[in-house]
Length: 288
Image (cartoon, rainbow, N blue to C red; front, side, top):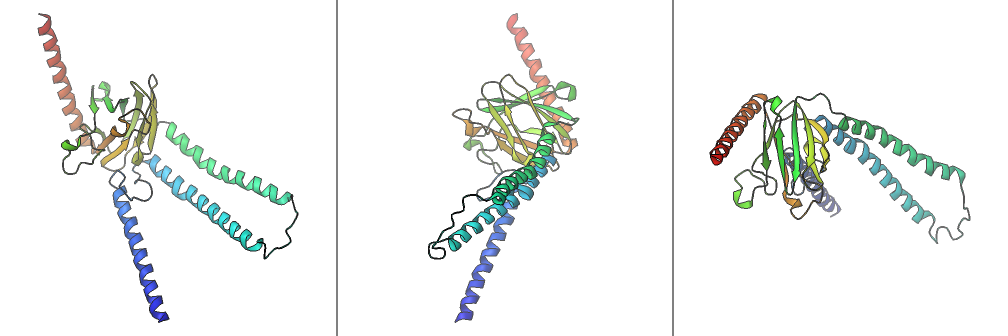
């Protein structure tokens, strides 16, 4: 009977472990897609050097420290409950000060903060210090969509707006609330400098897989950067409450090969030049 109970308990434990492993593996699959899925565990898959560093800082430094502190406090609470309850300790100690203990609970938290601060400041420096870039994209936040401009001296000379697709516009493979009508396109393995501003209120440009999050402020040009290591589509959203449609201004960056990027750039430049020619012709005709 006891063996059967043990066997049943072991089977349930095995099933729970298998289910947890399946959930973790599915979470990894979701993370690799460049967007978050319901039930996903951990952060999105990092695809830039900064995102890798962010994940290590969170998973390799913060989580162990938080776990150790939580377990220590739990053990301390259990010890106090068992050791110093009324039955086990009917005559309480009247100690009010303990120099060693007071020094310890001051020095140890300071040391923990120093351990956290060193990699934190290093990571912040890597985020802020923009290396020599291969291309620049200007991002403008608007209520409630994003605009992207590719500079002329880098083969661009055009810009476009990127709005969320309505539900009746979604196609197979599109993602509700994340897919857009015009994706920003960048080449894989290249350092992309982002110049970010706003035309109305404060927005926040955020792409978790890139490790990018920076405010878009009216009248101010902020900078960030990334270097995507894998091709794919990576999504983000505005992370500042910027008005009634704040939840409906997603960000979508498509990372492609250098050849496909050059083709996309040439195609969009051609369309932009044709549109400008048509507009100039229409303006000239209207003046006559």
